[in-house]
Structure formats: structure tokens, C-alpha cells
Image (tube, rainbow, N blue to C red; front, side, top):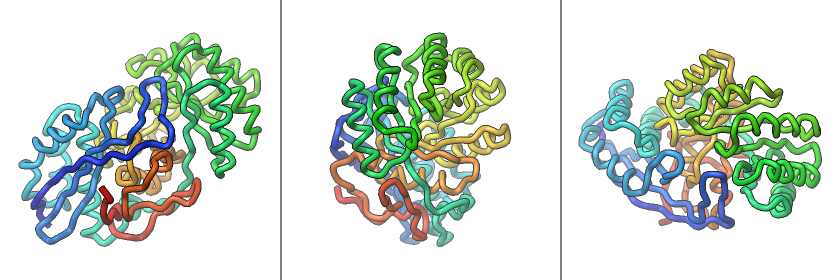
Amino acid sequence: MRIAEIETRRLAVALKKPFKTALRTVHTAESVVVRIRCHNGLEGWGEAPPTMAITGESLDSIEAFIQTVKPLLIGQNPLNYERVFPILQYAAIGNNSAKAAVDMALYDLIGRSCKLPLYQLLGGYRNEIETDYTVSVNSPEEMGEDATHYVKSGFTVLKIKVGIDDIQKDLERVREIRNRVGYTIKLRLDANQGWEAKSAIRAIRTMEDLGLDIELVEQPVKAYDLTGLKQVTDAVDTPIMADESVFSPLDAFEVLKNRAADLINIKLMKAGGIYRAETINRMAETCGVACMVGSMIESRIGISAAVHFAASKMNITRFDFDAPLMMVRDAVQGGVVYDGKTIKLPDNPGIGIVNIDW
Ligand code: MG
């Protein structure tokens, strides 16, 4: 199997409601879709969304990276992946989402060539998972209404975005949602770097004292502030999860060796694809740190790749894959199948994408 052609095309699908976090507001899910064709007729699909505020990448930069790496990959056999993935990683510094798009297309090809669904090729720990649903940061009342709506739709784990303005207001947001949904629903918070260590500690302790029963708090402080992250982790009982602080395996090493967080959120778009995400998960597992896998605002192409990876590993215990449910239409044929909060992995080879309704 030899790579013959690598093509890209842009996909844009509107969201039902703006996705709002402490870092950005998204109205439309945009991405660069990559298709790698081999001489034997097999095709692999990948995707990368532009998240300037997180990875620094745009639609243009993603396409430019893929153009750069294309001549290096044409003629290579994806099955020789210890040769191929380093070519991809070392073609340029950064560009992690663009790398992830190519990486998942290569894994798709490897799976198709072996006639195995990717989750089985990667370990086959389970073949279905349950996703949480994200409540965008808005007024406490609006968030309470949104949370009620998602619970009525069958979701039992909510991820609440906070960290945008005043930490006291975040407490109101969490109390409002807890009052509305009751205590059978799991609530996880994501401050997206919006707090500072001392005020985060005070807020999380207050939530503990009020018995708000928060499952975990994601990325309370700035991505670079590992000292602050560790301060928070050491000072509260609630588990703290690193997200924007961990892009690469080396970032994971820094967090793990200092025990700066209790949990790590792996995203293919930060890690540069499944090859490096596997390394991060193994390192975390070795250190007794469980992982979540999440996504950016991606269509079911990128999500399918991430779900295959996440489902395959025992150490990945939490799943944040609601992005396709936020879109006004599903442009993707094939891939993983949503049934309410459950996501099922069909036994089609590779990641299983068939076609896109552009
Ligand atoms: Mg996060």
C-alpha cells in the first residue's frame, strides 16, 4: 500500500446555538477535511478545525501544513507507521491539528488495510461509550435552562463552562444548575484557564462546603501556569484535570512528574493525532492518572477518530464528544453512531467514514 494523493477541502456547518467558553465563541463548525488515497484504491479520511485561541491554527495554516507534508508522504506505506508518523511530526514545529488530520487519515488507512475497525486495532477495550453534553457559559438563568433541556434530552453528565467573568458569578451558575437538575446528574466544570490559583481554590472549596458535588474541575488556570495548577490540585479535594496545559507527551511528563493535576484531557487536535495521544495515555496510565478524551468543535470525521481511540483504551474513563450534536446538520456518512448520550462503534474497517455531503 503506497500513498498516491492527498487532497483537502473545507467543510462548514452552522451550530444550533453559539458555543461559548472563556476562550472563544463559535457560531459555525469549520474544518479542513483531508483525504489520503493509496494506489490500491483505499482511502483514509481526516479533519482539523481551526482553533486560533487554543492551538494557534487557521484554515489557511492547516492547508499550508498539509501542502508541506504532502511530498514527504507520497509514496510511503502507512503500514510502516514507525517510519511515517515521525515524518509527519518532524515536518514542522506545532501545527498539531493539521498533523492530527493527517494522522487520523493514516490510521484510517491502516485499519482498512488490516480490515479491522480502528478501536480494535488500538486495543478494543470497549465498543460503545457515553458522552457528556456541554453547557456554554451564559447567565446563570440561561445556563440553568440549557442544563434542564439537556437532561430532558437524556444526558446524565454535563460539562459546565465557567471562567469568563467573575468567579462569584460562576458559583451562582453552578448552584443554579445543581438546583435545577438535582443530584443524580454528574456535573464537571471547565474554566478554560479563566481563573487564578488562589480564587480557584476558594471557589472550589466553597463548592465542596456547599455540597455541590462537582466531579472534576478542568483547567482552572492559564495553560503555562503549572505551579498554579499544582497549587489548586494540592489544595482541594475535587479532582483537577489538565487540558490546555497538556498538548504534547513532554507537557504530560511535566504534569505527571510534579503531579500538577489528577487527570488529563487528551485531544487529538492538541496532541497532533492518535500516535502521540497513545503515548500521553500510556504515560498517564503508568503514573496512575486516568484520562478523558475530548474534542474541539469537529464534525463526525474527527470525532469518529477520537472515539475509536478513546474506546480502545482502559485508562480513558471519561468522554466529551458532544460537538456533532450541536450542529444543524450531520454532513458525514459512516463513522461512529450516536444514540442519545451513547456512541456506538460499528465494525466497519478503519474509522469508517464513507462520504461527506458538502
Ligand atoms: Mg477543556
